[in-house]
Image (cartoon, rainbow, N blue to C red; front, side, top):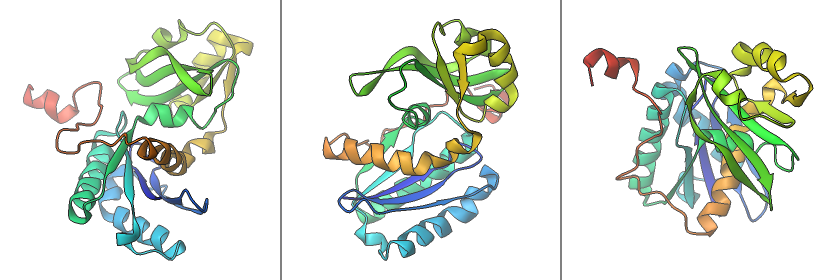
Length: 229
């Protein structure tokens, strides 16, 4: 199965093309702001397809991050995926941005805690525990103050995500030796990790109905707040 994976949930998103039969993978990432995804996304898709010597109609399934993350970025990614899926008649798999981060760190004996900067002194976060070849939820996904997340940490925990730039010192001061930190560049691997997760879900028939799907935001956007919605 050939999976096209699109991540526009964070500032450093990208696209991956994955063939789960051969194991071939092509990934193209960007360091541009999510405001630029609307201009660069189709170009990144084209690059990945060319790297794999594929045409767009060779895609069997499309995967996309379902949130949380950048409001603008998520909307651009999902609108692109909807357009491609409807035009080509291809199924779609959505995966949580936080869970994708966690799956970059399987097999850890303690906890895994993605931390994404949600601004307004909050983070998008969750706490997961690896057990029986899968992640159990210790703290449900949501928008939290960092101290609310840290209350759930009682063992060694690997933290990952762009929120570490703002809250890394706070985490270190609070948890001491229990706090471990993934390399900052690891978050750039979201598209390839998404592609592999989507492949497993697609084989189980776990597709998303894009006619009814809404991205996970956990709170209102600035525009919605200003409109009083």
